[in-house]
Image 1 (cartoon, rainbow, N blue to C red):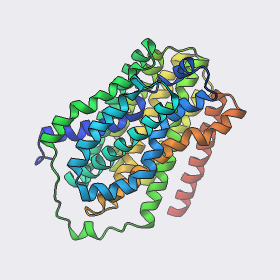
Image 2: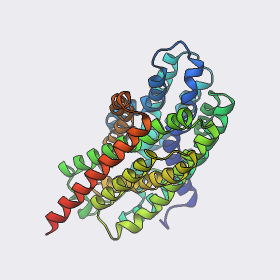
Image 3: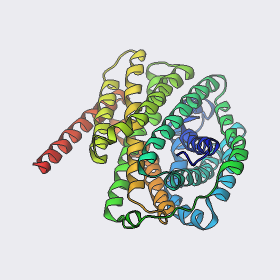
Image 4: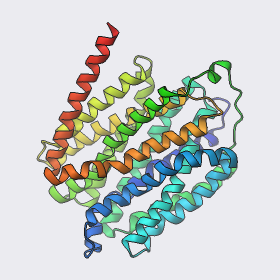
Length: 382
């Protein structure tokens, strides 16, 4: 890390932050869409789709984009993506139909995919394994703290008008000069050890576990705002503050990862995160006072910080420099496929149970799965 300038590190951190804010900036605005689009059937579903449609585009196109970025160059790709990130991201300020809003969100997803692939692969380019774990903890923390400001800012703005949170995406324009000046593509000399790392079935397991993690974790932004605003009558400001507390603790979880990694392997850390998510969801399922969310959200955020850093480090540890962009593309696809499918997979269940009972059911199911998984691992070690 000593050979990399502080401005380059700052640029990498800010780039990663844009991917973390890609969805959460408008999360508190979504429940208000049904007040504007009063004649649209299934507007609650479409409003959730506003959050997750970029994720579908990312999931489908990320592997293809990985190949394109590898040939076109990371720096050029980022500069173009940042411009269109702001253009399509802010479209909610002036578009007047749900169809055009959804199209703008899909195009926005293309930009986010590019930014995420490049920012992930550059971490692998710039840092060796130990420094990488440390930097990724700081990177995830930076992303989470950025998320705190974006969610809280979005919450305040959504109380004024549901359109205003979309203005947050202008941040992409301000990042362009920093990227142009400070970002350099690094040629890394691979050691024989790095080149011999197998990218096969083991990598598919990591992709699958990353998908499952995001499928579960994205219940937080897609379902909690509706529970807070509709059942607990929370304001956008209150909902934003509660979700922001999760992002703050997400930063703490990310920082804790490098310490956990010295004592546990990737799989054990993953199961620890699942257990914490189970705890958070179970408590959400039984609370009757809105202030208890300031206990559950930090638990869920901390778990997410550990798990996201863990699966990203796990993926990077299994790939070589030549395949890093492509591996990051497939990894990005798995993460965002989980985001897109989260509300779709769980929507039918919400037709049968109340939203709070839904959280209790998911929490108890995850406790059972983590108990079985830990038991199997202990048996295998004997």
